[in-house]
Every structure is written in structure tokens, then in C-alpha cells.
Length: 376
Image (cartoon, rainbow, N blue to C red):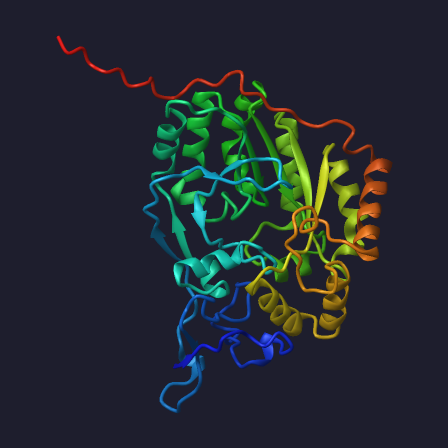
């Protein structure tokens, strides 16, 4: 392992997969990314190489580790003008699903870790999230509005099966009568169907399931530890049968990779009973760009240049444009065509005629306000 002084900035013209940072396939079996480059805030860039003493193939495989995150607040706030919520909860940092396109990957750099393999193998949990939430909902002057969960990393990723942090959060929200919106791609959400159905009867919950592709091979390559497409369709059916307002996110749409499936995905989810759908164009902020390029070079070498050309056509000639109002849907003729195809398919299938509503009328602080004791 060599520690090199990090250069002032990467050379965007050189594909990261050609920089010699790829990790051996056996060490990353079942993972999404190809490399584990140091985070952007680290003063040194560490590059593994064979020094003759120990071969790279002898290094241990990446195993999932879990660390307690000792956060003191659980509700995160935002004022972004192009999203429908102003507060969210993230029970976990990092995500074992390993989706190559995940726009949350760069957040691992804040922890001194790599947005690559570290993001999907070095996970952080917030076991005291339900207690923190109960305290924050009970704070004087708290005004309830829908809380979004799953907008950063998936709250129902595999380690939730053991830690049950998401279930604890839902129990607090249910008791308090507080509305919540959940985004996931995991069938594990069905474990909490009892709470979700109870909240749905009071208009306190809505769920969005991400369906990126119906191609099993592409799904396993692109989202290695996420449920298969059939499992997600079955999850949709069961949520809808239980009366839980459920929509679908075709996200991300990747030109020349899965954009041809837009209509087929919408037809499949409509057959499952879904009545609302949305989409998000591929986003490549910061390290995600190079990680996605490496992945394309390894798995689809015949089309990675074409994919990036089309991506740039939707981002004003850049790999990514973070401008509010454009970051989700892009701009230009290619982005316009994707949007119109999506709209036409939704119109044909009768989708998006109505929308699920949540209410705050049932909200009651989970803890009674503290009463000051009488002096005498």
C-alpha cells in the first residue's frame, strides 16, 4: 500500500478505471463499485500495488462492518426548492445495497471514508433514533409536516432486519400521529405492514418503491444486494392490497442503459395496482461520476462513451448539473424526450390522475410538555 500526496484536483479526462485503483473481483464479490479511492477531503491518496511481499489477491475481501453513530439530532432540515419536503430522517449512513448510481455515496467522504466500496461495506447505525425522534417531536413549538425517510440511504437495507431502527421510528410516528413518506427498494418494508396499514387508515403514510429495471442481469450488476425486480413488484402488490398509498419511482433513468424500459416498467407497476409514478434522471455528483464510469468500463465497455455523451447532452455539456429545477430531470432534447415518453406512458396507463395526501390533524406530541414544579 502506498500513500501519495493527493494532487490538487483529479484529471476528468482520464477514466478512473484506468488509474490502477481497481480492487480484485474476488475481494469485492457481491459489491457494486470497482474501486475504493480515498475520499476527497483526505490529504493522502492511498493506492494498493504488489510490492512482492504480499500479492493483492491475498488481501481479505470486503466485509460489512457496523459502527454506532452517536448523533444527537435525528431530524435533518433542508430548504431545497425542488423537493416536496423540508425535513428527513436517515437511520443509516452508507448502504449495503451497493447501487452503483447512488447519489448519496459522496457523503461517506465526510467520515474520512471512500464513497466507493467503503460506502457499501462500512455502515453506521443510529440505534437511539426513536428516542431522539420522540424528544424532537415533543419540543415546544414543533410544527408537524411530513417527514421523508429513505431520500439518502435506504432505511430497509439488509442490516435493518437485525437492528429494527426503522420499525422503532415508525412506532414513534404512529403514536404521535405524525405523517411520513418512505422511499425504498426493499421488500423488508412488508415486515412493518401492520404499522403502515394502521397509519394509512389515518392518512399518515405514503410509500414509494424504486424500480430501476426489469432486467434481472442488469439489476444484479447495478444494484447487487437489492431485491430483484419481481420481489419489488410483489412488494407493491402487497402494500396496495393492505391499503397503503404506494407509488413507483423509475429512478434513475440512464440513457442507453435502462431508458428503453420506461414504458415496460410503467406497464408492470400499473398491472400491480400502482396509480402514481415519477422518475429521476441519472445524477453524477462528485465521486459518483468516476465510480459510475469505472463500472461502465468493466461491465459495458462497448457503450460507456455513448452513455456519457448522452448524459452530458442532458446536463448542458457537463457530467452533472446541480442547479435546482434541473438536477432531477436534466435539460436539452434528450432529457425532454425522456420526460415526454414518461408522461405519454403515464397518460396511456391512467397514472397520476390523483395523488395521495397526508394530514397533520392527528398529531399529538409523544411526550407531555415538562411542567415546572411549584416553588411552594
